Every structure is written in structure tokens, then in C-alpha cells.
Amino acid sequence: MASTDTTPRAKTDDLAGLEAGLDALDAVQTHRTPTREVLVKKVLPPFIAIGLVLLVWQVLVSLKVTDETKLPAPSAVWDSLSDMWLKGTLLEVVWTSVSRGLLGFLLALAIGTPLGLLVARVKFVRAAIGPILQGLQSLPSVAWVPPAVLWFGLNDAMMYTVILLGAVPSIANGLVSGIDQIPPLHLRAGRTLGATGLAGARHIVMPAALPGYLAGLK
Image 1 (tube, rainbow, N blue to C red):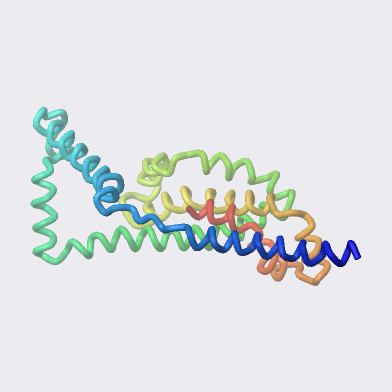
Image 2: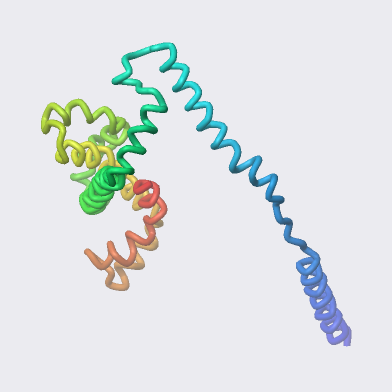
């Protein structure tokens, strides 16, 4: 009899606790940040920073710190942009830079992904070129500009060389780091289910290594 009496009481307590939790959720009110606060904390600081950059820029030009061909005045830059816009060449110039960056990134993705898989899965390859990739990643991309100019001149090949040398090591090392953090149990389970070779890389390795891989892409 004692056991039959306590069971309904326990159920009643559980229902009471559930109702209290639902009431607490209903009582929660969403707080909307005022527009003025958003403008002051989010929008205003970037504009202030841009204004300070323009002010310092103008001061340096006024003091004639360097030649005008190297540091033109802000007004001269604005006049040049306006002139290019009126001639219809501004978007073409911008697209040239953007297209180079996009194509270079896609090439780096196509090279860095299989390279990262190879380094992570083959011990000999990791021992051979793993330290080289880590060293290249620590080197700033801008450091490749002078030798690339000497090797190829001022052309598209120089641009893509700088992009690839800066992006491929980062993508490959990010993927290697992500693969190293995969629990071994996942890999063994995939092999048991027949996910080996390219199938294992596609269905097991790449999804599990996604956090490190995205960090490398970033």
C-alpha cells in the first residue's frame, strides 16, 4: 500500500515541477535593444575609426611626409574614384581584383584539401612536408610579393602565386588539425561499416574534421 501511495504523489510532484518550468518560460520577456544604443555601440565606432584614419591621412599629406605620388591627398583619391566612375571603369577595376581573389582561393582549395588529407593520413608525407607547411603558414603572405615580382613580373601569375602560397598551407594545416582531433572510434566504426578510401574520407573524415577545416579556410 505504501508503494501505491507514493507513486501518484511522485507523478504529481513531477507535473508540478513541469508546470512551474513552463510558467517560468512564459514569464521570460524578450528585451529589445533600443535603436539609439545600437547606433552608439555598433554603428558609431566604425565611423569614428574611419574619420580618424582620414584625419591622420590628411595630416600626413599636409606635413609632406612623403612624395604625393606615394601618399596622395584624400581629395585626389576621391577625384580619381569619381573620374573612374564617370568613365565606367571603376567596377571593372574592382572586379579584376575580386575575380583574382576568388579564383586564387578556389585554386588553393583544390590544392590544399587533397594535400591536407595526404599529410594527415600518410605518415611518410607528414614527416616529409608537414614541417614545411607549418613554416609556410607562419610566413605572412605579403612576404611573398617581392620574390613573386622577381620571378614572374607584375602580372596575374604573380598574383596567383602570392595567393596560393598564403592560402594552401593554411587550408592544408587546418584540415590536418581537424583530422587529428577525430576520435579514433569514429574511424574504426567507419572502417567496420565499409567506409574506406575515398568513401571514408567523404563520409567520415571530412565531416568530422569540419571545424578545423573551416578554421583553415577562414
